[in-house]
Length: 276
Image (tube, rainbow, N blue to C red; front, side):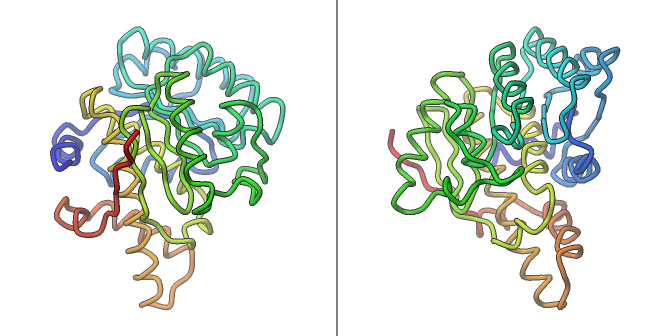
């Protein structure tokens, strides 16, 4: 997987993010930290035009409104025309009719290269059965050792239905394109106390897909997921050593991404392949 990591460093992919205003700054900074370059443009009069000059498009419905839905559709369709990867983060799908309907419409009208969400969001977009707690996964949906196989099956089915790499993030992360399936066991529970770690991962996924071949998308998404999880572990460790809180941990997380080498990552990432 080293070439996947190095491609991002060497190509500095420009990623167009129509994302939520709670985490937009963090998404921009994490893209810069991982080796990419961000641009945020959510007005309908320029969304498609900006998409045309970028290597990937990331659509995040975290602070959804009807104006940006149309911009997302325009940007996604333009990326499809150009053959650029498009990534969806269906934040809070299932929490309201607007979010659920917007996610369903986006999946219907845009061909996504990757869809990343928590288990409740993925259950909702896969079949309308997820139960969310605001924008977080419901405890009723949480994956455990006993339900991990069903989570893998859900991700594989959604991947087959949409043609997208599907990433379900949680205590154990699942990434699949229905042919290759990866389990990632990196991360720390304290990451859930930092707003936007999921949004940052989705933005980074855009960079990793933009810099790599389509046949490597599943591996790229898995490596990117491990990178975020391992950076979270390092950030938590540093916060503990310095008796710091969650604000500092957020900074340490971005620092860890910006200073990461493949040698360091390969020594800490925990990725396993599941036979389909």
